[in-house]
Length: 255
Length: 322
Image (cartoon, rainbow over all chains, first blue to last red; front, side, top):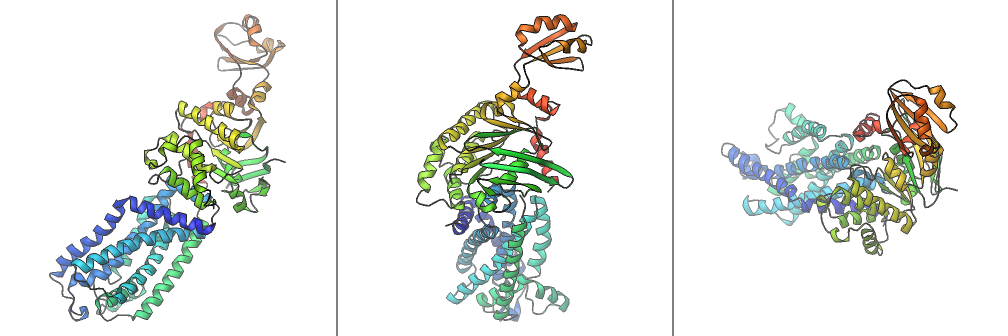
């Protein structure tokens, strides 16, 4: 037991809360669906993805981007719960326990990842059923791998911010500055191939772009912009960096 | 040797000295109280003993282990009940206990038996499967008491355990705390700014003011130390203090803003004589000493003035210093 029991405890709590507060799951599903249905249909009526889209319509084209967006918004927001825990002092109960901060951090990452994976699987099923997306065993495996890597990074980022901030307002302010550049500059909503070079530069330094690229190429069969190998390389590196920062921030967190 | 020993334990936050060279020796199985107004340094002292805050200087050992050297080992032998609720409202009472057991590495073979046992101890068996959202403040505190005991700690820290509870619930809770002490033989360290709580609950008390211990003894002895009953006289004119002080049964006399406060050995026998000597009196009040008088005596001011809504201030001060 010991640390492993603690890891399980923190994961167990996240899952229990997630499954009980159904609003979390509903919210996490409804938002991406609105993007797909409203933006996908609306913009799709005037936008042709053209040759880069490999025969997909706009709605299908943004589907992988919407998956990435779901993770981006959901996982970053997950750090906010730390602040609520601070407010009710539940965090104190956890921090006082004879557990290492690293264990607590990984328990949180695991918990958040489980939430996120459930959301993504629901969206993948909806995509298969209603949006003309066709998954193969290969694309399901790659999608889940990419999602897990991205999730680990973004949850770590959220937890880092959550461990530093003391108010939900402050958290919202900081994440607001981060989330839109990360999302809009990821190529989630447009092909990155023919962008002017200054804009492409921003896209290329955004780690989320590599997740969108990997997802889009495997799910839709659109040729990868960066190559799958580079995508994974960047995502793994991003995850390692963010986890390191996150564990460090947790060690420094005061209560 | 005591279960808890501190030597010149000190905590500074920037320029503010929150705890100033405190020396304690707490014996096994006693209920030891830290009494003082908000901001006196009680919670800070507790936090250092529980390894939540590192001491600036001095040392403390809990259960024979130095808090600075091996905090993890200390944490295994202590339980902590916080000032503010610290359970997850979405989970049930029993689930909160289960989480705690996992985090403290309680043997999984024992965990159900232990949970049943502590739930029974605080009379929450009936409500254990309800989400804590539906618990009242008193029930929540009881569950957290139970939780603090789940891993069978030798020492239990209670930080203002009855803060914000109504008097009836408070008295109930005292009952539970006393039961823990007698049935489980746990050493209990409690902080409070309620005189009554300190008086009824604690075997020994340390009165803390401005980070220093100003007095330490049993509640009875502390009151006895004042040497008599408290007599408060509302005066019409300025009394002749000199004359009053000459009386052999007057232990202490103070005149402030029209009120003469006397400490009198056996007030019942001497009140008539006193009234004859001090001059024109508007009203008289005579009673046995309380811990408030003790605090007044040792700290030079009333503790009551600072009660009220103080916990907010204490928090504001603490968070400013972080």
